[in-house]
Length: 143
Image (cartoon, rainbow, N blue to C red; front, side, top):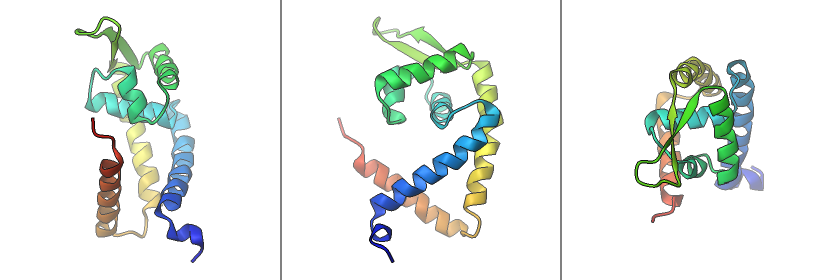
């Protein structure tokens, strides 16, 4: 075993970069980037997120998230609305076209994940998901 194989941080990073690359290739047919796909999923689950919320959730700078959301907005997949309590902020919502694009792309991403998970049992995958969720929760800032 190499020293890198003994470091969870390195392994997770390597797995993420590899997975991201394969998913990015698959999402080309839906005209979406990985960050755009993730943003659409988040906005479906939590309508009305702010640009700052999206930036935090996709681990990017606010300016980068704003530019990415601008692309989704120009494509008609999201819309910005004034925040009801903060006139400086905007809330982001999926449009019907955004929901349709997400619905079309989801099976593509699922197929990639299933192909990459071939050979693992459901129990194996459950442990991995649990570990990843716990690691993410443990490293999330608490405000």
